[in-house]
Amino acid sequence: SSLRACGLGYRAPYLKGTARLVRDLDLPALRGARLDEIRAALLPLPGVGPKVADCVLLFSLGKDEAFPIDVWVARALARAYPHLLGPRVMKKLRSGGRANLTKGEYDAISAAARKKFGAYAGYAQQYIFMKARSEGQD
Image (tube, rainbow, N blue to C red; front, side):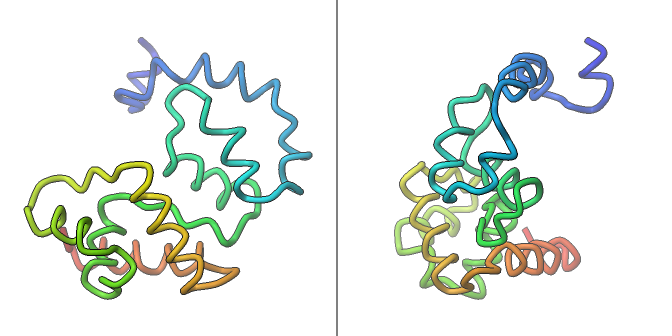
């Protein structure tokens, strides 16, 4: 499809359907809601998981406390803040495979990061991400 040609990869099939559903959301009203309420509204959308929801919260809805977690961030946290991950996630990361976090693990790490970094946890996430990427850490 032409969406795949734009470099959307596996996300291409979700885009049209999700765009239609987002059109029906009252995004300006969501901006004033609590982080957990907005996440609950976003997660049912096709192709939207916790990380994408947190990206929308942080980059589109002004929720500076949102803390998106991908493999780069998880590995960087493992090096700098292992106490935020817990032993089970640390074991996953040490095994060398992809750090596929369960929803419970993701939510626990995100909550711990928000507690550690406070109202601007999303800014900390961006610095952690950029540092990991610039150093080519994997």
